[in-house]
Image (tube, rainbow, N blue to C red; front, side, top):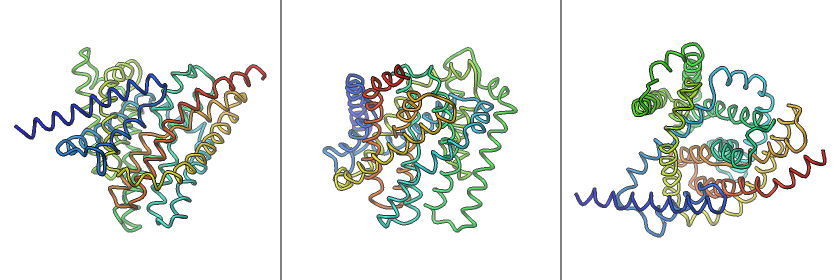
Length: 386
C-alpha cells in the first residue's frame, strides 16, 4: 500500500507540474516540449528531487506516448496520398536528407564518437518535429498557404525515411554483423511494404473493423490495434513507432478525423510523459559542457532547414515569402529526435550523445515556433513587395 501511495504522489505531482508548465508555455507562445524536458531534468538522475518510485511506470507511459504520437501523425495521411506525395517530392526529400543528416554525422565523427554515434546523430539533426511544425502552421494561419503541402510532403518523406533508418540504427546499436544487419533491414522493409500494401488495397476492411458509432469502442479498437501492430513491428526489428504510424495511414476520411479528436487528449498526456522520461534519463550536470556545441549545431541546422524549405518551395513554383515560410516551418525539432537519442543512449552509443541531443532539442523546440512568430512581419512585407 505504501508503494502505491508514493507512486500516486510522485506521478500526480509530475502531471500537475506539467499542466502548470503547459499553461506557462501557452501564455508565452512557445512549444511546451522544452519545459517538459527541463522538468524531467529536475526530477531525474542528478536532478533537484530524483523520483524514487514512479520512474518505471513513467518509462512505460513514455513508450505508449511514442506510439500515440506516431499513430496520430499517420492519421493525417492516407496511403494513396502518401505514395503520390513521395513520387512528386522525392528530389526535395533527398536534399532534406543530405543537408540535415550531415551536420549531426560530421559532428559525431569530429568528436571521435565513432560510426554508430554518427548514424544516431545524423537522425537527431535530420528529422523535423511534425507535431511542433503542425502547431506553428495552425497558430500562424499558414495551413491554407500554397507552401503548406510542400512542408507536409517533406514531413511524410522524413517519416518514411525513419521507417528504414530506425532498423538500421537498431541493428548497429545491437552490434549485429553486416549480414545480420542486412537481414534486419530487409525484414523491416518487407514489413513496411506489406503494411503499406494492406493499407492501399484493404484499408476499407480495416476501417470497417475498427469503425463504431460508440466513441469508447472506437478508441479501444484503434489504440488496441496500434499497440498490437507496434509490438509485432518491434519483434520484427521495425520501430514500434513506425508500426503505429502505418496503422494511422490505414485509416482515412471521416473515421480518421473522428479518431484524431478522440486520441488528442490521450496523445498529449502520454507525449508529455515521454518528454519528461527523456529528461529523467539525462544528467543535467552533463548538459552544460555540451551547451556551446549544441548552440553551434542548432545554428547550422537552422540554415540547412531554411535551405531545404526554400529549395522545395521553389521547385513547386512558390514565391519568395512562401519559400521563407516553408524553411522556417521546418526548423523545430522534438519527438522523433528524442526517440532516436533515447535509442542511442539505451544502446550505449556514447555517454555524451544524450546531453547533446537534449540541449539541441531544447534550443530548436523553443526557438523554432518563436522564430516563426518573429519573422512573420518580415515575410508579410516580402509578400506585399512581391
